[in-house]
Each structure stands twice: as C-alpha cells, then as structure tokens.
Length: 300
Image (cartoon, rainbow, N blue to C red; front, side, top):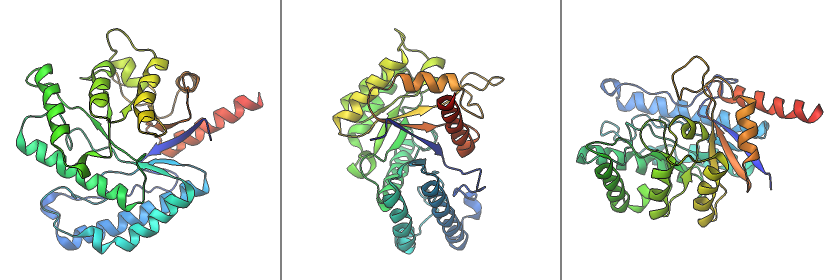
C-alpha cells in the first residue's frame, strides 16, 4: 500500500477542462441544463482518463457537475437521462482506483445555520452530492467535505445547531459527510469533537490549523492523529488537505504551488497510509511540480 497519494481539485489545467460549467438561474432552461450536463460529464470523463494515464488516484469533482442540481429550477431527472454516462465514468474510476470527493461551498451547505431555508438548501446539496458519488461507483471513502459554517448568534448556539442538523439529516444526505475545520471561525479542537460525536471523519488541513490555531495549539502530527482516529474508526484510509500560504496574499489564501517545506512537514507527520488533496491554484500542474520535487530529492 502506498504511504501517501496526491490529488488535485476539480480542474485539469493541462487539459484546460473543469467539468463545472453552469449558468444563472434566469437562464436555466431544461435545454440549457441538458447541454451543460452533457458537456460537464464529457469533460469529467476526459479528466479521469487523464488521471488514469498519469497514475493520479485522488480527485475532487466540482460541485457544479450538474448545474443548479440542488436548486428548484433544475427539475430534470438527470440521473436517469445520463445514467449510461455515469456508468462509463464510474468504470474509469473503478479500474484505476480513483478516490473521488466533493466539497460544496460554505454558502451552499452550512451546518450551523438555524434558518429553515438554509438548512433545507444544505440538505438538498448533500443529497445531490451523495447521489453523484454513488453514481460514480465510489465506496465509503469518497466523501462530501463540509465546514461547520458561521457562529451566529453565538458559538454555543451555532455548534448546537450543527449537532441538531447532523442528527436530523436523512441517511442519504449524511452518510458521505466529512467535517473540516476552517481558517476563519472553527478551529480543529472545536470541530474534531463534532465529528467524533456523529461518527464522521474529521478532515485535517495544516494551513487552516496555522491560520486559525487551536488553544492549546495542535501540532501537525497531532492534527493528523486526530483525523486518523476518525477515519480509522470507519475502516477508511485518511485524507488530508495540503496547501501553502500565498506569499503576497491575505492569511489563508492558497498559493499557486505547494511549498516543499509544507510538503515535507506533512509527509513527516504521517503515521498511516493517507491521501493528500492538494489545494493550489495551479491544480494538476502543482501536483506534477511536487512530484518532480520528490524525484529530484531522491536523485540528489
């Protein structure tokens, strides 16, 4: 078993494909949506074939694969219309061992809101994301990564809302969730117990951990141990995020590539075989550059 695998997010800059074409609600006619879905699925197929050719086994599917899928404007039975396309793409992922995931925006799926309309929208987004990963033939290791959300009206109430929402979700909206700490509101030490309480994986992000540190501070080895416990309890290979601070950007902004120092620190902290999702602006190009760095180091 490989000690770690590297993946990238949503777009291949090499292919100039992203499988995330969408439209405004005002333009979302059935014909327009069908055209966009067909285009996105064709691009996803090309991306997964590209990953297969290059030995890449970790990839995040963009949440706009099915445009406006969780919005009432999209009334299409897209899972029926495009069933054969999904079967074909699922076979590529299966034979090449690609672990897929999705990551709705915080605006699209918040756990902490008390507003019924926000909670309903989040549930619909989770149901959609679960269906996509199911149709792509993914096992339980394929997850929909969520942040907790905001902290209004106060932190205890918001966290209680998150607990209540996770308890209330139907199984098809809940069973693929992994919960990630963030760099603005919720620290690793706050999010980890939420994941534990609900039997869900906790996803570790060293950059978030540096930008919004816990009290007491969590080291990278401890952060990964926390995550490993939750993934391991489910018999799943852990997955972590890997990003570097953009040198001239605001705190938490992702850089174009991964700083080799951040990569070395993360790899050194691994205790079990794991996967890294590279969150870098240069997508697959950042992954390839990191691979070259590894090879150069071995050759030196």
